[in-house]
Image (cartoon, rainbow, N blue to C red):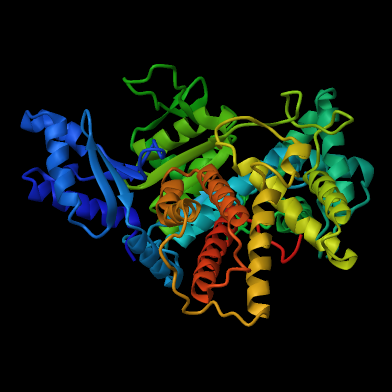
Length: 588
């Protein structure tokens, strides 16, 4: 199904051609002056230069052609050369009916579907998820869902940090506490215990204790470095411990991501890339890209056009150890081998931008990816408290994600119970659904690259630009539809009539923009554009609802038309929030 803007562009192009001008000037856009018109075409302004005519002269000739089309209710040329357009109400109603019958609501699947890997989440094992992990998880999840909705093959990879010094620190601290365990006996031949010698709670306490001690005790830190080295060399006892750490951590991570309704297709780890490092490094050396500098192996990635210094990419340190750079490059090798992606997108803190500039340039320069493979970086800003500083607990520590979710759910439960709109038995589940909308919408409604203030009071409000307000609107529509069905009404095959009021037409115009908005939001990797759109659509619906007596309308044909329009608006809103990563309850 063609999007409405595509149909308008076709008509505009034909009108330019019939008037004697190049059809490429026939591009229409949503009007930036809704008080004057609904759509506008500025092509006459550009054509004036090419044809050496006054733009108003061209605009008037094209407008005369557009007036012949049944698609438009009103077309006018205004100085200096704008073409103002209002859609025909009958045409708009017929388009919305087709849109309601289309399973993708006017969004055509991609003509050339791409394979896209999204690297998001990125937690380190053995550490609890905290609020700093929130943005990557929910931004990446939304972009993944958008891509799939548009017909692309999108693969989400959590890419766990599991192979650095943190592992050596845990092993060393565990040996201090439980030296009798068989994992530390080099002569032990196995088998090692099947059950981990720690719980997730103990593991999450061990790492910070070890990290703090390593900063004050050099001998302890050296032992941890040696343990890391022996793990990476494959020492059996340490590998067995590493497996325990992974199993306990990943089980806990999956549980917490499930609370966020975030799912990954791949649970790949830094360690998975290790087998690819030796051949990759050797190839870069043989082909002259990598060379030694002060003992380290590096690749120059600076370019003549750089306006600021881009340091070389360090592949191996002087002691032969690899770095995050090495692992990220080897991960690209692995992804190309396994999936041959058209694009790899990293959803990461914007402070890591220089790291990815180096990695991407090195990957391109050394031929790790094909020239046409896209390597993309979406850097997100910081989630701050009301004081403008990174979000903390009241005690001043880093807030665990579990605690944030629990606090938001508690706030929503209190408001829902006070509202008394949901039975006590359902209130807790409803609070979880609405709480998730508060968290995700509160984050995603901000442009990803910008820092923002996480304001619990505002984000959990049922008024204003919030997740609960969007859900409240959806629940209101569901309630109206259910009452209509209970009264014996039917939604199937109902005709949508031309708008009976300006408020209804404005709602219809908002609804038809869904397809264009989704494509634009995905192209720009901008979930906040979905939020802006559904906030506007919800507002237009609520205005229409307050000025229209829908269920008490005496004309059955008019009533059925309004209910069919409401059903379409519900579908658009529910599809949109699913792309943002949350859902709506039946009642609130």
